[in-house]
Image 1: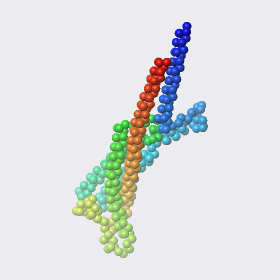
Image 2: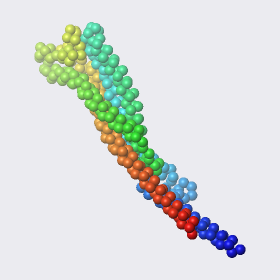
Image 3: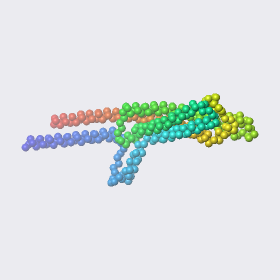
Image 4: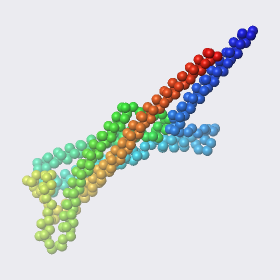
Length: 326
């Protein structure tokens, strides 16, 4: 009986030691988990009966606050500004180009062959406007989605963040592409100011005509606006210019004022798009830096976890050997 009792006592001792080792291992795992994710994971508030928390706040409200915390507001503002600027430039520019062509046909070029090239260029520009609107609609959505992916709030909501070399390469590509688009839109902004300058000169000439006394008819006929000097129609186009009362009649038409104001709004839209792209560039650069830092942090945490796991294995093997000797 005595050897059996000693064997049972030894088995009970070994089982208790194994339970202590397992409990200590679980405590170390929990401590390592809290050390790795404790700073980035939001604290869970225990809820009471139903959907009410101890503070009396509804679960739906907490969910809304969590969702609002995951919105990349910088990217959202840049997207709204980009959409607004592109919409103003494309919509107003399309209508203003059509009005400009009608004014040229009615008052400056009676022969259709003289402004045939200009007509083709305006139609081509209108098709380009369609393509610009479609491209920036998709590009803005892609950049907004990229902002949602790289924001730190998304990391906190999902309690884990993984980044790859492909993701960092895509973010760098977006930075380069946005920079190229920003430089291109600076050119578009400068180009859109040219028709504003032309219409402003015509309107200034009309203001001079209105300011002249009534009996100065000869001087009024000497005030002219020659569209041929801007290079949009050839020099042999007739009449090519408008003087005196004919110029004043052009300025009094509703189409002239509408085209003039639409060109101003289109130029403002191009400027807003440039600002939006600069804003996007700053956001993308900060997101790329965040991804770079996150990859380093992730590599460090993986190495740390591997070292701790090896240390736990060594301790467990040492305890097993010690138990076998005892």
